[in-house]
Length: 83
Image: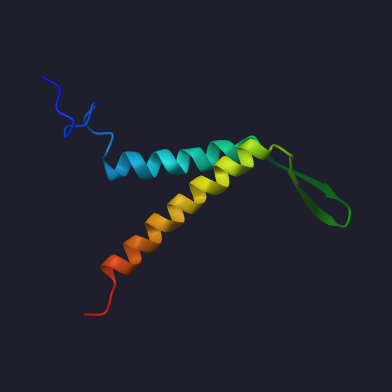
């Protein structure tokens, strides 16, 4: 019988799944937006970082990074508070 208190698929509320999924969202969205290139010439190395204008990818990456930041801030404040 269906119980609303039980997760529909077990394990999706695990911290490992939540953190790795959020990190994966950041990496995959930035992967499609940021392009790195480099070249060597007589005077040294030249590196170029190019960011494409893809607002959806940037918004999702920034929101996922904000969620990760909030979780990490909570972790630090909750576990390393003065006693």
